[in-house]
Image 1: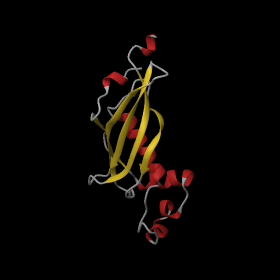
Image 2: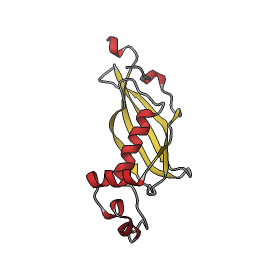
Image 3: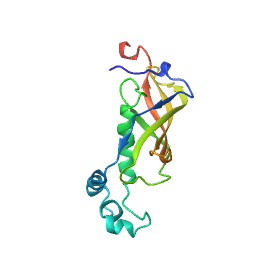
Length: 152
């Protein structure tokens, strides 16, 4: 599988994605299956909520972020294999019609001591709306193979 290896990343390197528009029907469909709360499902009840209108589930935002991350130019060899998060937050809600995109920055790179064929990169991925306002911020660690690991 083509992609970048541990040696191809540098601290400070950034990657971005295309934009994805969040449709109200998609908000409702996701919520009905995974987060069935009124402010994700019903326009009238959502208007009376803390959000003042229909909003996407944070988990829907996370799923969209994952899609944008996979489609972005980050491209670790072997795929995006997460090892966990140090930070994960939603500073503002996603509303119908928002166009989301991501920017990822490599914060740290570490070669594995116990597994020389792989390493880890720490990445901050911020999901923005069309106004450039962050709607999700996550700092996570990804497992990335080293060059030659597939032949070792």
